[in-house]
Amino acid sequence: MDHQKLSSAVYDGSVTAVDSVKEDVQETKVVYRGWKVMPYIIGNETFEKLGIIGTLSNLLVYLTSVFNMKSVTAATIITAFAGTVNFGTFVAAFLCDTYFGRYKTLNVAVLACFLGSLAILLTAAVPQLHPAPCGTASSCIGPSGGQIAFLMMGLGILVVGAGGIRPCNLAFGADQFNPKSGSGKRGIDSFFNWYFFTFTFAQILSLTVVVYVQSNVSWTIGLTIPVVLMFLASVIFFAGAKLYVKIEASGSPLASVAHVITAAIKKHRLEPVEQPWLNLYNYYPSKYANAKLKYTQQFRFLDKAAILTPEDKLEADGKPVNPWNLCTMQQVEEVKCIMRVLPIWFASSIYYLTMAQQMTYPVFQALQSDRRLGSGGFMIPAATYVVFLMTGMTLFIIFYARVLERRRTLALTQPTLGLAPRKGEISSMSAMWLIPQLVLAGIADAFGAIGQMEFYYKQFPENMRSFAGSIFYVGGGVSSYISSFLITTVHRMTQNSAGGNWLAEDLNKGRLDYFYFLLAGILAVNFAYFLVMARWYRYKGSDDEETSYETSGDIIKEQDKNKV
Image: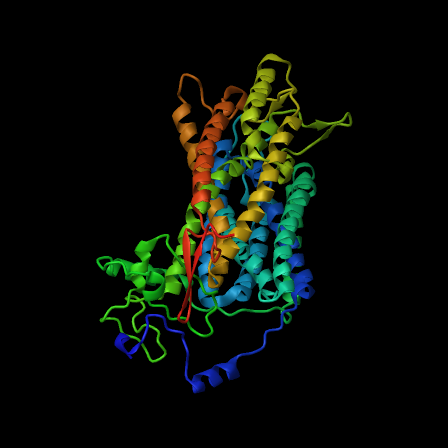
């Protein structure tokens, strides 16, 4: 069938009676168990997060104290590792949605997290897998090539595990609720909150109990705890295998994006059609997974992908013979949804630049601050201070720069509490001054993380929900790589300057306050950019479009954003 045999560019996707019966016979009824399977999913999520965070939360101190690395080297490795994990979520999302489905992807990822945690444990338990202890010596023997290789192997396996779990676990949990029922929709919204609650709970427990054991009892025992927790997470997840809703992979959603972009480029010389909501080709299959979208005015250059020309051929059911030459208006609108999200995502990525810094240099600051609690001699582990990140916000960073000056001044002018190995004098200023900064950073993260995840999940096409989960973490990956680049660049450019190295190994000799002012300036520009993009943004399927048009047979309804 060619385009001349169609009475309109809008095709309803109807099929023959035989095809309809065949599809109905093959269709199986999906049983959504909702909250009944949440103990397995949330239980797995809790233990998995306890395990992986317990392994990684104190890794910065582990690399400097056990592997004898310099602070800048350790911070660079941590941020690069975090970035690689987050970028790995995009690869996992592609494999998940295209080939394996979420359940099979999670099978591999859960086991990889367990094996990766076990490999990190072995670097502490086996003397041959880490350098000789340094003690209080001013110079130490660094790790050998083999020791570094084994450590990187463990981190690489964790990349596979965490990269697979992060984009799939949230979407897999949401799959257990019926998205077409009111209770199912409420269950999905509630699940998002529980997901991040368990994430926060896991971080708090890991950053207190597990970190204390690692720092004050034994690295071997402290790293054994996460391995045991990861094993429990695996057992709990597989225990619910027969109860889960397991949505099969439906082919690559990225192929549709590529089709639209390619077809739009091929047809870029065509004149735009009048009344595109009527005249663009709009085949819509009867059992298409994604919600039907209205025509929108943004990114109109993509509309040309859906212009039906005499060269375009159609199959008997109305779909294009060559999807690289002709796409539907529905496909074009789905790509527009993705393109509208990207500017918001970029602003969020820059925002997380500061969050990435909260996991590195505040730990080093705590190491050179008074960490004593009370008069009993109890000392809070340096990495534990990051626990306050769960309830904080980065707007405090400008004020904190003033306080940081105070810590440095006290270390240089007042009696100190001793010497931090290979770093410098321990300031008499209490490390509790770090808490307000981290508390406010965590408050921001609570709003930002949940809001972003729900935003991506609801604004992406339905068949790209694993990608929606991954883009959140990819944004964190971008910020981690930018963070590594900033640390390396600032260190290199200031180490021989007249004012001294901003990120010196001994923070008392550095100017970390200047580094924080630099971050504050970047964030101020990013905030202004975000406000502009937020005003420009139009929600998927809403009436808050500049002008949106809905097609339903021969009835066209124009909706203006000024209507209430």
